[in-house]
Image (cartoon, rainbow, N blue to C red; front, side, top):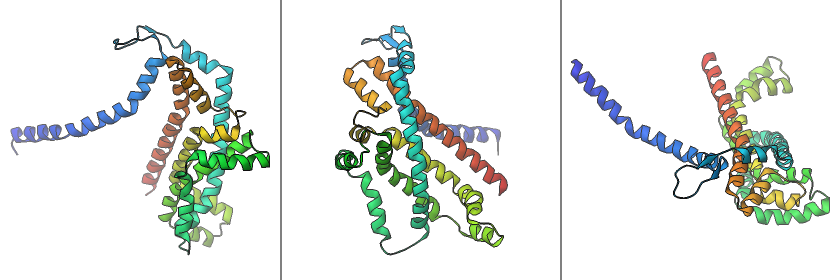
Length: 278
């Protein structure tokens, strides 16, 4: 092929990629635009219309909120609740998702529907009903009560994420390990969990994010005794200080972004390892 024809094809190929580049740019703008806006608000002391950028810059508001004892306690409570809820959700969801993914039994569709209901029922209705029960059980206003109530919206996402893993799961690996003399716990740790690792990472991410962002259920069951970061953020929004709101919003968005980055890295490393093995 002549050199000029190759150049034309190369130019045409580059031109054909422009829609993809535009799509990526638009996606990044939509994803990063709100974060950039929060950074600008958190770092500004004087920002009035029609100025495109703040007149003065300082992150004193952000550091003041981050060093505030009340904010640190709320971050600790949110991380503790999110971590415990994630572990409990995985412990419950793994056997449930395995059964629902591998077995076909009468009433399976009804079970899936019942599991899906907490995602469509308004949290306010759920919380009001559970508040009465938790008051009688002595769990209202306690950390344990908040953890238990967070499991209600978390479990459906965790179970459905893991069902997709076990629908494609090959039990032959476990049978081979059993034939070679491996016990149940060894099969679990050395066969089941490694094979389902990427799905478990995604399910854990869903569980943590759903628990981390809970406000209504935490307010109703916590009764103002358990203060999490979303509760501080909603209180700041009611106060109406843009810099404070932006600072708390950035702090609130930090752990989820870190969790997503760690999950993405773990999934990438897992994919690379599997690719090298096979």
